[in-house]
Image 1: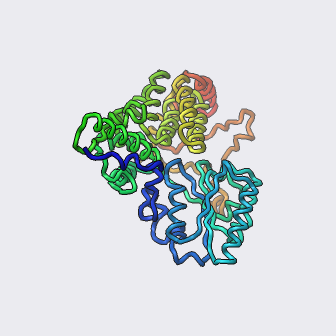
Image 2 (image 1 turned 90 degrees about the vertical axis):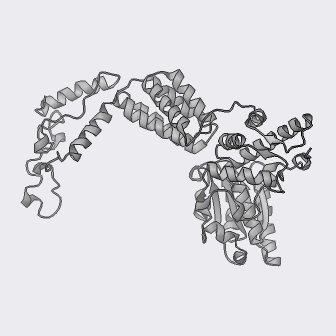
Image 3 (image 1 turned 90 degrees about the horizontal axis):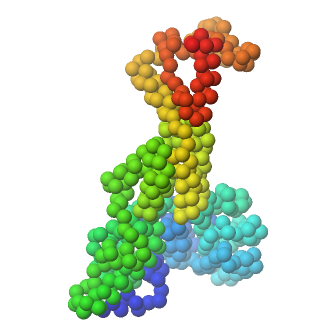
Length: 446
């Protein structure tokens, strides 16, 4: 039987062993690694003696922030110092800065300071970084999963480039998993990975390289153990069942680019529209567990709030947008909570698609050529010669009227009397309906 020793010979986790030694090995982030980009320039050995810009890497967990910092240090030949905002204090930062200054002045050695989770640093701790960054004692590479605009002080932001990392694509993760299986630093071919297992690892990783490699290592250990107990001479085969057992999670049939993706999101939106909050929460859970992009879910909630709820409850759109902002701000898995809150609110509130129908009807008229000229009294009268053309003549300023509504023509001549918006009697739109009837009577359109 093939020995499983390569799987168990190192106490170092697979995700650490597979850290790239150069930018060429980095999975994903192609938008930041184009020739001539700041990160590529920073990694060049020719840049050691030149002034280098500090950077703040902002992105979800497992997208390569630490990996990029280490690869840049190795490629450029710079000295690499790592601090964690969880354990380091102001004294530690000042010691690193002084040491970096000494290294530069005595040995001509440039230092990269990698600061993980900079959003956890207090203002005083971040202030301690400023002299070293401003004077070039260190090249700061800071990493954060939170929006730096809220968590990093302005002086440090202004002295650094803010670079946004993206969640790894399925192709990026697939390549990463394949390399880890074959690479001598990884599993060195000690196991084989079937297609279903590979797909499960990619799906469960949800764009997180570390999660993919951790699950692969656990699944490979299970597969090797099964093969040993069966006294099988063949290379152990990692299956989807091994992946499921390793992560203690049922595997969903869900392809983010396939039919299941569209079927589940369709059921999600239709459940909200149908006011079945339990079904909506169920489909939300399926998408979250399958690794669906939470920003995609949030976007659909915003659309649903405008399309299916509208002015029956104007707060729905505010809540949906707030959920989208919250997901972008805090990330996952905590982002599931505002997503669930918005889903429950949208599913249980009053519904109206009147605004949605109104804009579609108006667009249909415009596309059909039914628009006509803007009435002269509504035209812009602020430029020279406008009044000579009759622009603005006869316009009644609504705020000057007792009711705040001026009885004058607003639609173009061909569309006078055309109605697009017809409010329902649901929720707050009932009040809109009553007010609109009064307004239309004043306008002579009642």
